[in-house]
Structure formats: C-alpha cells, structure tokens
Amino acid sequence: MKLLVCISQTPDPTSKISFNADGTEFNAAGVQFIMNPYDEWYALVRACELREAQGGTVVALNVGPVTNETTIRKALAIGADEAVRIDCNPTGSGFVAKQIAEYARAENFDIIFFGKETIDHNGSEVGAMVAEHLDLPYVSYASKLEINNSTATLERDIEGGV
Image 1 (cartoon, rainbow, N blue to C red):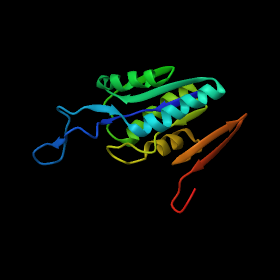
Image 2 (image 1 turned 135 degrees about the vertical axis):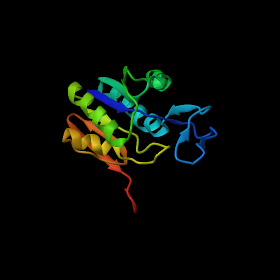
Image 3 (image 1 turned 45 degrees about the vertical axis):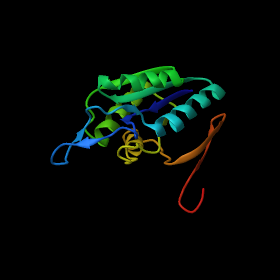
Image 4 (image 1 turned 180 degrees about the vertical axis):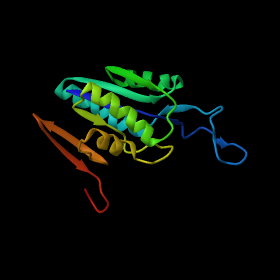
C-alpha cells in the first residue's frame, strides 16, 4: 500500500507572534516553527500504523521553502519511509492543493492523508481541493480508519454524534 501524508509547517503555539505596523502581514522573525500537530498526530501517525498492519510505504509531502526541512526531517524520524518537499512559496490553499494533486497523480497513491486542519489558519480546505483535482472521494474529519482486504471503513465525527 502506498500512502501519502501531506504535512505543513506552522508556528509553534507557544511562540510570541507579531504583525507588521499596519497589521496586514505576519512577522516570522524569532518565531519557532513545528509540524502542524494535526498532520503529525493524526495523519502521519495513523498512516505509519496502517503501514505496519498492511505493509507498504509512507511518503510525507510538504509544499514550501527550504526552511521547512526540519519539519520534513521530523516526519522521517516519526516513521515516514520517504519525504518530498515541493520547493516553492505557497501562496494559498488552492496553490498548495494543485501542487499536491500534481505530485499525487504522478505517483499513484492508494490513500492520501491530511490533518483535519492547520493550527495557524484552521481552513481545512486543501484536502477537499486535492480530491477535486484528482476526482477522488474525500472524507473530512475521519476519526477512525480500518482496512480489511480492499474495503476501507471510516468513522467521522460530526455535530450531534459519530
């Protein structure tokens, strides 16, 4: 099984952040960055567990500049078999989704994992956009995934219950 896990880099929530004088741009100076916790704790860890149970490979993918290398190295330390960085300056969710879709299309993955959202923008947009680009089904907010032969069973958290 070939599993893709999309990881992003976000400011550490314990870092002191600031904005430029007119409040329109984030000032990254002195800010510590980490792997987005939802990408790490849910997507990457679950993909590694699935690989252990089913076999295959886990590829971590990041769309971003060279400064994201520490996040990519962490993905490898956690258990990804490979890591890829698409070297660019992401300009928005649509741009990132297109980059991921182009890579995923060329590599033919069985499952693509995303964290439920990023802790910096809380947009939860990229996964659905990638699915649209690839004409694939998409399940948001999945809280459980089991695979038995060629059948995947998912549970997801929704308002009012599971």
